[in-house]
Amino acid sequence: MNKSDAQAYVQRWEAVAEIERQERKAPSVADNWRQLNAIRHRARRLGITRQDDDGEMELFLLWGRLRAEYATRQIE
Image 1 (cartoon, one colour):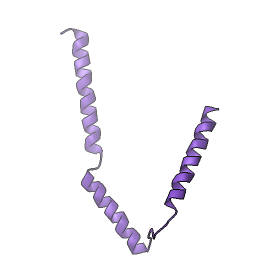
Image 2: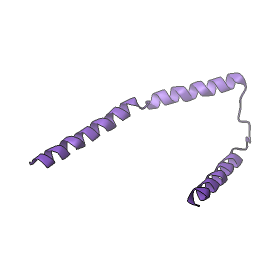
Image 3: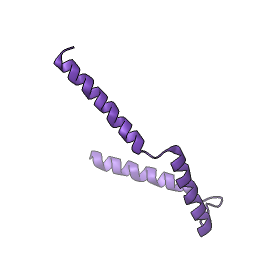
Image 4: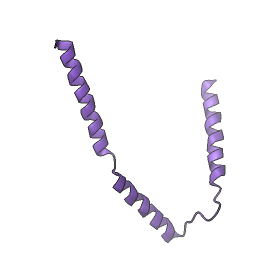
């Protein structure tokens, strides 16, 4: 093993260590569930409900149109 091979080896393991650090900082699935449940309970206490049709599809379509328009303006 020469010097450049050794440096590449060390750099790969440093990259692995960085990814592991980022994964440890990310919230766990259990934390995400607790947070989601807390939001849901708070919404219920405040009387915020989705009802049958809250216009969700219209919002998705609006965001799609806005994103497409933004993308075309960025290309020009």
